[in-house]
Image (cartoon, rainbow over all chains, first blue to last red; front, side):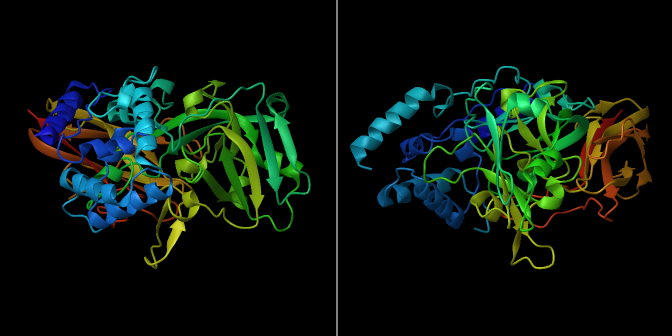
Length: 94
Length: 372
């Protein structure tokens, strides 16, 4: 639902020639609050425009953990589940 | 980190980032209201195609690509250090840099990931479409002149740029890119102080940034404060991992990106335009990185037939060139295309092989129009 709202919003903004503001909705499903740990270092748009398969998200989270993101193993699994539910590329090779 | 400390940190982060808290709309960046916000922290902004109408892209329409948060710099305290494989390390203040001979040149900057959004499967990174590109006038000191003062040793082969921007945690890699010595000494490579006839705006790397025309935008480091002369390519994340692509002759090996691709974009008419029958000027911009443009073809039938178009306007070595084509618009639905070629024999392709980081997107731009 939110994704279609986002797509529609983006399309409407593009049609109107107004591209300055874009909504960044985060679906409030299980695990959404874990995204708060990503936004300690970068804004949420960075997270939600990525599209990976399981390997890509896992490697990205591992890299962020190496960089200091406070994501213990249990939470990594839950965050992976959330990200794959909403931000997965169906054609992803990784 | 324990859970309690994490909660405190998270709370602090949320308080500090009201504009990008989950579900909020990022606030427009002052002076950059026309641009698409790809991310608000760090700031990454893209120009809609309709904004790229001028040979010199105005500051308000010029894209912003930052890997890190923008640093605070006091120009009075700023210095540029030149060190490494040199006989005479330097520390230059702003007034000392300004006292050196300066040159002005037009050069295009394009983010290596411009067009990433069109890769399928999707590629990792900021989802740029067409507008992470701009063309401007830059004024500064030739890097070759600075290097000549520093006297590179016989072992010098590469030159790395380090800006004042730093990663958000000590464990994350600093943004440092290097270019080969031949490119650093090339007469168009600048330590730039002005953009469009004014001091370089903070968002664009002022007071001083590198301008490495022809190379991917990340070579033109912002907020420059340290130049390192090295025997080898800089060994860091942004050379060995990011800004790399598989080699054309062996896709098991990767290389650090250097030259931009040969590429063109159609600015007019816009995609989805409704046109009246008759003469329509198809126009846009073309560039070729280290190559030199040799031709631009336009198609009015989705690439079935191509006709040479004309380059018009200024022709700087590393600037973009305008192309124009008088198209006879007949009633119906049409797909317009532009295809540039260059002195390396490169021609814009119809497809681009997947690369996981989504670079090198220079696929022929197609614009659909209705004539009625």
